[in-house]
Length: 182
Length: 279
Image (spheres, chains in turn yellow, cyan):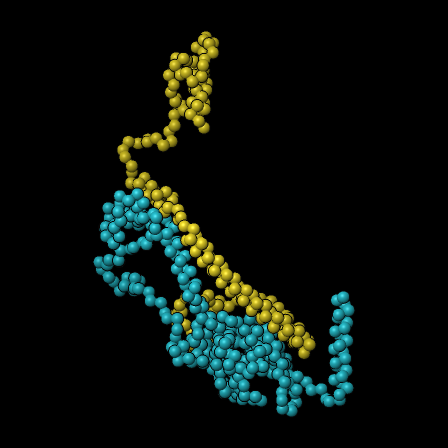
């Protein structure tokens, strides 16, 4: 919004306020009033009820400790004055960067593809085994195809970490035995 | 087209069966057996290659260059002793340089330097909490000794159990057993594992569906022509495989996929390799 538009808006708004309180004078003088001339109406331009209170200090005194703390915390969120300058790479550096990135993608792709072929061969082995079992013994095959009603995923499964845990293998594990009821 | 092919295929097998019956030799049966591919899942991540190490280093340096300035004024409030300690260890930069803001050159990477922990009164508990964390080594004693019976060897790989039984053929193979009456693949393999290796193993049978099939043809004349072995996959989480008496187990080993190739019979290995995991 340009300054021109803003001033005209304020002018119109102030005119309505004035007309409510001093409509008589407005009725008396029906002289068409030019815009943007604050002096002509004889009323000095004031904000009146339009006064913007947001951002205005309401209490005397400087910044409170609470306010300082708030500003301090807000300063963590914003990038203002914390962001570094944009990274500008020369043509050769850019080429280097892209080569590194492409090489990494290639390695990842090879890993992914070898993993997929490995899984595919494993799946084919399962298929062959199932077909052969069906030929060899239909009863065993039917039992093998039975899906368990409730699946219990073992909580002992752990995600591999970069370094081993303090006890890498629990050798002293014993099968839990139910206490004998007399 | 599909039906035509199928009919051809069925007729071919029918012919083969007819020839077999014509030859007159008594058709011997194949024994059906169930086996287990018992594996120990990897405990640590795979070894990093030189390339991946270099790539991750490059990425971390880029991150340092592009990250926002460390807001030290929040963690070390102004006018405190902590701030004093923090500023003492910081590298001195030219404040008049327009690129330097909050003691950080905005045209280069930022390495945040923290002051060392100053302790007024060290208690036993605080010493324990703040003690420097030393990561455990990735290689174990079992690795140095190359103890193939240990489960703490090759922590970044899947280890597979193979056994040597005194029976018809003294060869390394995955443990297998005959299916007794009233048993299915799952129950017979769990029974076999307890019988061969004892009860003190925390084992998870992945599925009752066979993951591998191997046809073993016996050379010596016997009741059976050979054995059809169906292997189930399972995993061990805790405990040890301890060969039981009267189980016939002479030797056992926990090996990775590559090592298996040198231990197993060549023909057996060729059939088995596809079902195993590389990592």
